[in-house]
Length: 136
Image: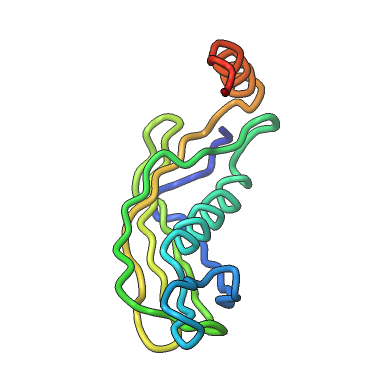
């Protein structure tokens, strides 16, 4: 990881809640931002931000997510995700995260990512895959 990442560094991303990001089990009139999609968008926002601080051959993987999804954003609504670096411990980076729509705060929490050497991770996963029993 390159030098330069500091506490307080932050980023934001605005997105529109499209159909793929909504729940479907409450019917068409309640197509709202699904929590798993919100978490995915938080992770992607933090991943994209960290890429600017990583060396060639590095990336980051999610290690922990803790969010409170407290507001329902309807299909077509805009959401702004904000992430701020609150801790750096070696290769571990923790973010404070929030998400707001046009009316209210819809999410707050934390997300931790771990910087990895992609080739080293690939080798570990391949070794693990080779040692797993074949699927029936």
